[in-house]
Length: 316
Ligand code: BLA
Image (cartoon, rainbow, N blue to C red; front, side):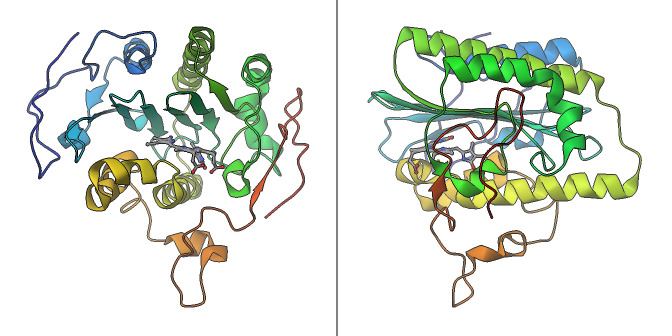
């Protein structure tokens, strides 16, 4: 459904009072990520009849400092879903961004659905994955549980959307054997492939969710919770999108969007700090080293083979 949202001036994070089930605001053009969001919401509703807006609905629309750009946000929850949220940005200069993620409740060790697409005039930077909650490089159990049947899907799309070259080595530990990490120039064909990859990966995630059984063992739930908190802590501190957000809405609002919306839970799902999880980022004076990577960029080629076996160098 087409909806309209009042765009309020600063201070923002305006409250909307309804229970809308869409955050798509205009008819999708071929280069818009709105249709991705709408697809995901429609499919989620088919899987779970009780998808409801989350309390983070306070975040709906933000306007950039220069008044030219809207940041659209929406968020939902469901019995197995702690948070499904989306941020999308379209600027008049042709920058388009989608950050769409789904975080399970701690009783489930489901992967985190992650679609991070950055499109500027020419280049597209894409991460699409079912980010593993637990180790998939050294431990086979979790990998087999969730990815064994998905390897052919990963192989299919890694051929269509080839490896994007070196990346921050630390990021790889958050990626699965089926991760799509790619860069490509904009074309209708490439965007069509990306849309079908998104649809197939999202359906795969929903299928995992449909079959997921609630964990009752408290120690296992704690492990899930800590793993999710660690993930949120990483992303809230080191997300490459932060600089774009800062430029658009200023540092204070960017931090709010990151900590209270995109990676909501970072302040309340656990007590550990970034440096507890990632001590290698501690500088001489005890602060967090700003750069994204300590190890440096690595993995020039896809470090997973077509059987889903990790073939990269050991690191970290
Ligand atoms: C670049 N985004 C990147 C890169 C990765 C990711 C791996 C390549 C640079 C690098 O290796 O760090 C994405 N990294 C991730 C993801 C995880 C991770 C998803 O660790 C999860 C664990 N990207 C966005 C959004 C914006 C964005 C919302 O998802 C903008 C608002 C921008 N990403 C963006 C830009 C670059 C980038 C501008 C290139 C510049 C750079 O590398 O810093």
